Length: 286
Image 1: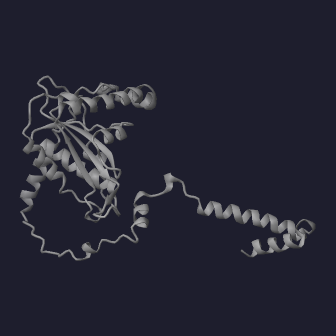
Image 2 (image 1 turned 135 degrees about the horizontal axis):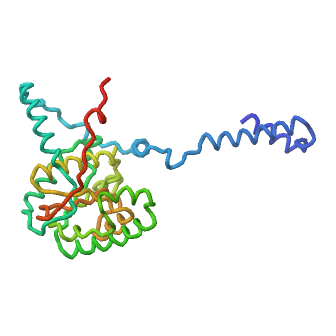
Image 3 (image 1 turned 90 degrees about the horizontal axis):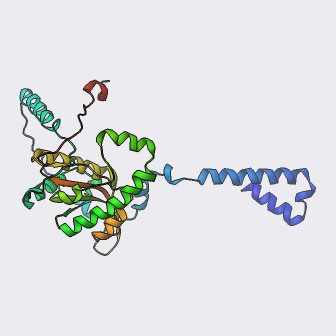
């Protein structure tokens, strides 16, 4: 600030361009301005989503959270032998899970779908905000429209947006822009993340870690689907999210995260003969 004041004084007296001091101060002023711009600059890619949420919520503290009663945690401890058996059994079950793209049109009782969503809702979330909405689509007309929206964008994705390497990496899976399973599967579950909440008076409420919270909930949902005896495939509708959001009448605070067709596999369903990485490649002891 001293440099700026000196330059202003020299300019007012007409001495700025008639002295070496004036020129030096002008250079210093330029360096000062550039430094401030660099210091204050922040690109969107550098900005952390969660930090933004924290900044926004400084004046939006939910007082009800402070009054939540804490109760004793009930834990039914089992023997180590049982723990080992359970952990091994669960791995054996989940290791059979596969992404299936060929579905039977056979109906699934809606109560089963409700229990799957209920399980997903037990997932942990930042500050217990539970920032998720699960839209279940059974109506054939809606499923047809969803397929039209997705395939329109996917055809462009495969031909232009995704790039040669991406398309080449998908070749072993034999997946294309065509997504017939979006109509064949008896249910579509569209997972929307609530980027922020909306209070009873329309006020904006912060949702911490909404991206990762919803992603964890999706993991719970995938496990529940497989455990129940049904199949699915994780579909991320690239560039179709906004159109699907409008079709389903979702509010402004929600964004589509994942689309899951759910049902029984077709009798002639096939899957790639892939092998999962061994434990030594995905786990490190320290």
